[in-house]
Amino acid sequence: MNFYKYQALGNDYLVLNPAEVGWELTVEEIKLICHRHYGVGSDGILWGPMATNESDFALRIFNPDGSEAEKSGNGLRIFSRFLWDMDLVGESPFTIQTASGEVVSQVHPSGKMVSVEMGQVTFDSAKIPVTGPPRQVLNETITVACKDYRFCAASIGNPHCVLICDEVSEQEARSAGPLIENDPRFPNRTNVQFMKVLDRNNIQIEIWERGAGYTLASGSSSCAAAAVAHRLGLCDSKILVHMPGGILDITVGEGFELSMTGPVVKVAEGTIEEEIFR
Image 1 (cartoon, rainbow, N blue to C red):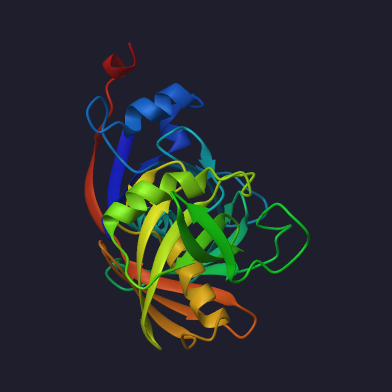
Image 2 (cartoon, rainbow, N blue to C red):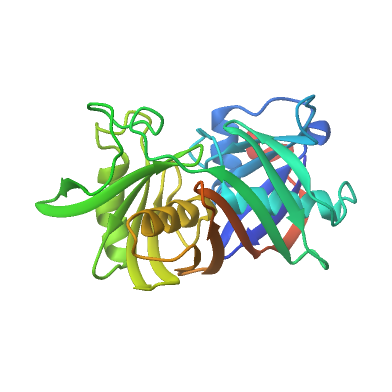
């Protein structure tokens, strides 16, 4: 099967076109393809384009553990760039159907920057979901390894837990992230962001991604963290999100609609040999 590898701020995905593969991938095949020693290596697989009557294109997103993600900001930017490289889209906006609904994407001239309208964020416990009584999940407390964190939960089609911190570090994301991801109050597990507010227009985050682990950057995580910072009155509506992989530009609309702009780089394309599956 052919593969097309891209990275967006260090978050790398493989695009696999179902028309070129010819069969549905199993969980074990996804794990193997994404494995950095036994496969090609990636933070996930973008399975598309697929036929749809609802949007211009349809996309499925798989994590390296084989689970399916509802949405990925970096993944959507990468998939948009792939469509542009294949001459399937130009520089006009187009729609992509995901497991959590439709988004609008636009590739900028030269293909190196892509904007995606990610949809509306919600803090509603029933929609994220978070266990307990119906409520807006804001400024609650979670205790991990004897440490108390103040957090807000949000969804932009996939679940997020944003922790408000004085300082953030990779070490803390790696140690506390998996415990929060699998906390029973998040029945579908959750993505985790450790967020430090730098000023009215800048935040810094470290990310533990559901189904993928520690990651250098995440588009949906950037959107969730920016939405929380704005919802708490800590930041204005235009926010630069600083991550180890780089910076994303997020705009929070009056109704908490989120738009994201950031870079995409094509890394490689090639063929996955049948031999790796034996």
